[in-house]
Amino acid sequence: MTYSITSRKTILAAAALAFLTSAAQAETTNSTTLGELANMKVDTQIYGFLNGQIESVQATGGATPYSTRGRVSDGNSRIGFRGNIGVTDDIKGVWQLEGALNNFDEGGVNTRGQSQTLSSRNSYVGIESAKFGTFVIGNNDSVYRSLIGSGGELGGNLGLTVRGLDVWNNTSAQMSGNADSVFSRGEARYKNSAHYLSPVYYGLQVGASYGFDETQDSNTNRARWSVAAKYTWGPLSLGVGYDRQNSTGVNTDMLTQGFGFRTGEVAGAKTDFAKVVGVYKLPTHTTIGLGFEQGRYGYEDVAVPSAGSFYAGSTYGTMKQNAAMASIAQDFGRATVMASYGKLYDLKNTTFANNGDFGATQYSIGAIFNLNRYLSPYVYYTKIRNRAQQSVNLGQAPIYSNDIGKSDAYLAPGDSPRAFGIGLIARF
Picture 1 (cartoon, one colour):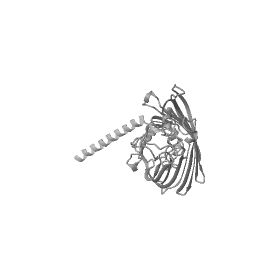
Picture 2: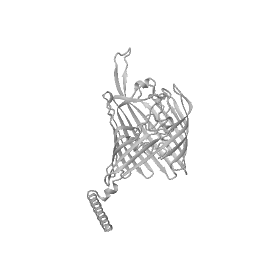
Picture 3: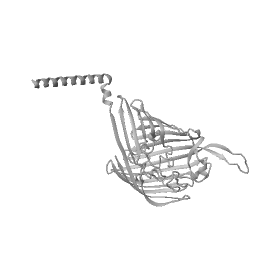
């Protein structure tokens, strides 16, 4: 008798559970389609790489040379976390938190005494749609870098992981992507920024970025924006872009004081860059890259009273400087031989020294061997020749001849760096 009552209770409980489960499933199905249920998931990925180099470096030719010395340097190492959150069949939330592992060789502090944080690299949150594109906000590369940058397949800063125009990106042999590079000096990561990338239509993708100036020091708005477009057709990729910095121009005072060519806050001036780049992959496992960029730098020149004139005043103008770059990479099985050359031309309409004093050239050559998809040793040599007033520096591990260890450390104008290195990159 006891057994019979227990069995009935068990059967009734199972029936009740089945009914409740069916009701819950029916309610969920009524409010959410099965397709939406399939896409309402959370995906998370951990990624990055460590990139270390043993180098011999020096810089000579300027007022304060940097003597030959050995060092261990970092090649823009990083760790990141990214993912997406499904909303509907077409829409999903996207996010990324990326931190720099730069200068892991020095405990995370560089030669300017600066340290990195977990969100110091591309970190954002946004919405992605296959129909309408992607919109994100945060601390992120402008489309001038992310869409048509020289460090990846016409986008990003992915050198030695993805091949682009700058085949030595993320090493000291890099020659693009920074304000003191020989090429693509308009690339930047925008703080407090918003970015849009369209879907790819017949090989064409466009994008726009806007960086807000939330501080507005001296009531000057130095907001920055850029637009870019990329077209891919089989082995050919082409990119064009424009970047503009408001209330930004050449610091003519520092220029005349021997600190080199620098830009900073200049009310009423603007600095902009325009660039076109291309990469072509031949059937012979050869990759060829070409690029051209024009920089236009606003300035304010303050007249000082003299014996001939008792009046002080300001004049505004624009300095213009062109840059070009070429690269080639040839695969031999797991090994690849790579070389690149860049030239920064005369600075036209300069207010100090001669136009030709601001030119520079750089070449880089070397090889990389892929032990597998995760681990690759490499070797390289790079040489920069700076004219008397130029301070083009090494790519990811610049050297400074003045005020080393301070935030305002700099390379003396005319100093010409060179580096020979052996490196190892471990991807994860």
